[in-house]
Length: 429
Image (cartoon, rainbow, N blue to C red; front, side, top):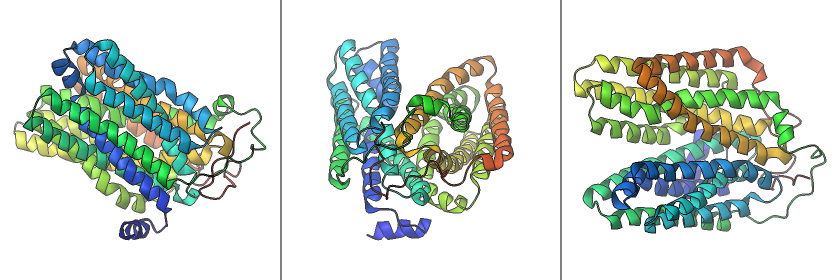
């Protein structure tokens, strides 16, 4: 009750109790994933004897399975209750990740990767869709902000705990324990969903569902334009930081390996604790301006990486890069309160699952494409990665300001659900 009241005061709104409980489960779920995230290739290569190439392909299979499973999950979510789909997805992820604790042959690892990855792909879409069905349009920003905070808090805490466990005992059983605990967190989240989300009968078919499906999504030019721009922003604002900064820092700055780990833990925890205050500050701004602010912060952070190559003091270089990590984190906080609620506001109720699945697919695509582009540019010109990314982010920010009212601040009249909060979205025909 105390937590709920403090959150309500922070946002000046009253999120349903079910949302707060779901986000507690979400944080615990991400804690489990954070336990294995930094050590996946190390585990498969050093303790299971797979080559680095095979280990990389196993991880790629997780991402690939999640990508393939995302669009069908959107169609399912428009026909069936998100609760059942989310529970099934979590159980599949639990089987896949727990199974990785016992693999000793590549084919076993690939099988577990496909099962776990497909569960993760469906989980992401179903989780967002379920949360949108239990809040009002006015509560969407607060709900997405709380989800972002829960994700980063769990991920950062998991990575920190995993680092302590592995540094204390680098043996097979330690890694197996981490994978098994990750599987347990998926089961725990499924039980929370089962317990706290009420069962309600499926609503009748939506009157305007004819001619729906992904063809209707493809005809929404405003949505596709926003998603395409967001794909590019994820590449330059998120993927470069997560995937390209570490090798750049190691090769071109005086900061040591310890500083690299500090950047990511620092970033995750800053997002976790700054997300709510940033949401409160930005919620009165027009979405176009908020999107421009996020793009500008990413541009400033990317340019801030360049002076680190000129600093010869390890401490000073680390301090500068921590400042870069902080600006990136603020940009993430601002960005996260725009896109999710905006997608929900653009989506007709009977196509909400499909819209969310396309949104999720673009996020996955950005994290997949970003390292490939960034790695290629890094090999050609290390500095161009950062000033080039900053230029792209700046152009996106300027474009958002020019778009103005074409980025709506409220749900469109044709897309606003008439169902009360907590009721399932109407079933598609």
